[in-house]
Image 1 (cartoon, one colour):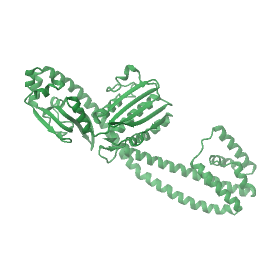
Image 2 (cartoon, rainbow, N blue to C red):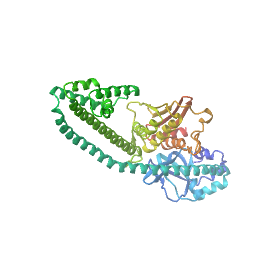
Image 3 (cartoon, one colour):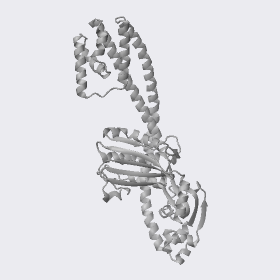
Length: 474
């Protein structure tokens, strides 16, 4: 035990007599998943990790968040002891763990007789209290937003489904009206003209579903040409028909085929019917696209917030990134930013906290949007090796100056204006990737090329921390 305590950085400066004062502690062995203590229980001990790791997990409103992970060679438990509070989170073993426990009385004796340890513990306590408060506030906000988003998605689901059913019913009713109105038109046309009209209507309807983006000058020329033709054939209020017919790709040459052998009054009825049919098809197409868009957003919100799913689960990273891009699609479109996905095929599935990782992608992509302003490109790349998957989010913005690159993950550090940024986004991102998932995150930046590179382990956390423990005592 004496030798094991000497390997702990906190105790390296202690004399032999001071170390002997610590030998009254208790050894604790835990299996993976075992709880060392539960949230809300009285704090009675100070812990040192010899082997394995302990993850502090806080539960709020049926949601879990990892506050910290203490690996071999670290200590914890001083905050509730010194503050006189209950445990603010649960301590759970990651892999097989060996801990050394100093009970409350022994903890106070250590602080009294070991000034070096006392100074170190008090210093860590101050920073940990600040971090805990910051994380708690931020997590509560995220939980509230997630609950709101999940509830909103649920409430939107029913009216969206109802609107979808109504759109399908409208389609059926319009088909009935179309067939009835066609009977009043077909008596004025020869069989060949009727066949051509229906063929023209079918092609124009397809064009309405996939409209072309005409150059404004080209569109004006087409509208003038069609308007002049309608006027020369005495079509009443022909100018009202022009925008719909041009948008559907109808040309004067096509109208000539219909109008060759019928009177002006008959042509007026036929073209009014055609324009009304195409206008209805256009409105119906807009309605269907709108409902589909709402449905996609509802599904994205559900997937983004991982509604009704356990926090830790097997996830597909590509799905989470795509859902995040859907959530941010308005901002991307608003600022005319292009997104290029370069995904590795068959990227391995990993075990992770899905909603937390989505927060990582949100923070990184949102920062890239802010950096780019209007215009520019964001690249999202994924790859893998035998140990981890790699996600890169890069942009061609102005970059991050070398003077501040080392500080971007610090709490409350921001380059944004007053009231615009909190300086917590990248710090929380770092904690989620490193503390919660045993991964790593790095930033490489030059003008025109900024890249955040996230490494996430493929192996379960237990295996990762076992490797970390072996390395710590190698």
